[in-house]
Length: 277
View 1 (tube, rainbow, N blue to C red):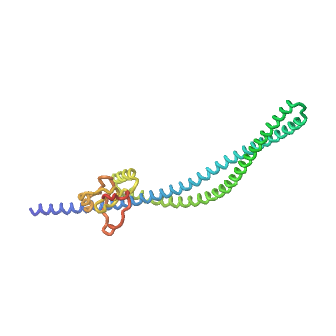
View 2 (tube, rainbow, N blue to C red; view 1 turned 90 degrees about the vertical axis):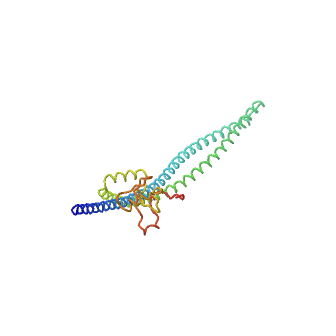
View 3 (cartoon, rainbow, N blue to C red; view 1 turned 180 degrees about the vertical axis):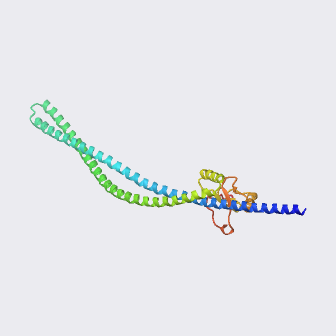
């Protein structure tokens, strides 16, 4: 009987030792996962900043491109207007020459019938000249407006090109700096990957790809800070004992308990809490 008791005591000690080792393993995995989750959140934040800066630069380029298109269009329109103005000027001179001829013929008309015909012709030419003069004035106003707008566009393009050049250089510096930080974080990510169970890491990646947000979140006041659903007491007790990793039954995020000194701090990750919770 004494021998049996000794064996039982040894088995109990071994079980306790294995349990402690298991708890230590789970805790280490959780710490690695928390660091990985923080790292991925930071990478996502940096990549968003890079995208915003590149988008802002693209907006400047698009504005410059549109103004260049407008400049080219207005330049073409101005040339057409100038060509049309020249043609109208030629027609006006021709009409004035015809008017002089008609007036000479009218002055030398011998018969009333001939006089009336030439009078109508002269009046018709005068009307034509008046219309040509009105068109010429409108065309000149159009040309003046086009030239003024082209002058404005020339200044705008010069200013925008200078601004774009400076913005491009600044954006490149900022994006390069952000990318450098991302690269360092990704190196650390590869290190963490080797320390995390492949099965756990695969599940982590699956949740990350689905949620696109923080995967490892804390439980605050019995609530998952990822999806803001209630966590069962059974799951909380399992986390406290450190027996295994616990996943939220609603969003599949990995859960951990806040340390007492962190209870008043807001948790990062997930969307804004529902007031109904």
